[in-house]
Structures are given as C-alpha cells and as structure tokens.
Length: 190
Image (tube, rainbow, N blue to C red):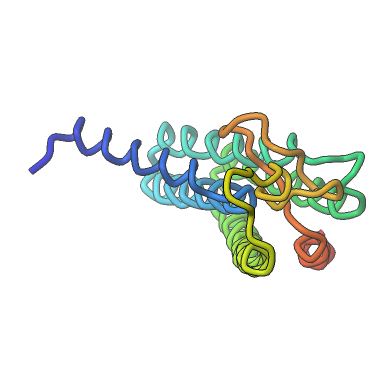
C-alpha cells in the first residue's frame, strides 16, 4: 500500500500529464471538471455543516469560474464572449450566494449549469480532435517540419477565450463550429 504522500505525488503527476497532453478545448473541459468537483465537495460539506471545507471548496470553484471569465477574448470573441461572460458572472454570483447563505439551491444550480456546459465543451473537443485528425490524414506534415502552433492547437482569431499564456490559464475555444455551439448554449442559459 502506498503512503498518502506517494499517492498524492502519483496523482499530481497524473494530473500534470493530463493537462500537458490536453488540447486547448480539453483544458476548458478540465477546468469545468475541477469546478464541478469543488462544488460537489462544497455541497457535501454544506450538508455536513463543515463551514471550513464548504468555504475552501467554494472559493476554489469561484477561482476557476473567475479564470474562465477573465480569459474571455472580449475583442475577438463577439457575441459568444458576451454570452459566456454573462453566464460566468451569474455562476460566480451564485457561488458567492451559496457560500454566504449556505444555499444548496444556488449550488445545485451552478453544478447543473457547469455540467451542461462541460458536456457541450467535451463534444466541441471531440469534434475538433476528429477534424484535426481528418486534416492530418488529408495533408500530412512533411518530415522535419513542425505544424504551426495555431493549427496544432485548433485556435482561431474568433476564439471566445484568449490563447493560453501557460498551463494555469490555458483557456481557448476552437473552430467556428465550436463557437456556434457555445453561442447556442450561451443563448439558452443567459
């Protein structure tokens, strides 16, 4: 049996590998996973009346939503970025309300919205990866040549999120189909 320190180290290595190998859109999915996990942990703590754990986990969820909000490309993201901004702001406010007033309804709402949005981003990621694979098969990269970073990452000028500066702020959206799907989601939830 591994010690807790060894288990924690193995988990951190696994998580690092997961982040480093994820596509830009996949990183957004991972952020949603984290926010949902922290909200779920906060909900359990709230029901158990563990205020410290509730606060810690809700603050972590707020930070993730704040990163998503702060990473929006407001100049090039158009209506999609505006809709996502409204959604993220609403979710942030609900997380604060849940924490201040021990409001499980607000927390349940946030989890529901994040889960729906995560499913949409995961589908966008699957589609983008499939499109990239099809493009690579159609036009393979010649030996010794590295594809352009934007092409490899699937980023575009019309992204709702800015391109990543580093792993912790890696929040971008993909092709125009991804933006259209997100826009429909944003319209439904806004």
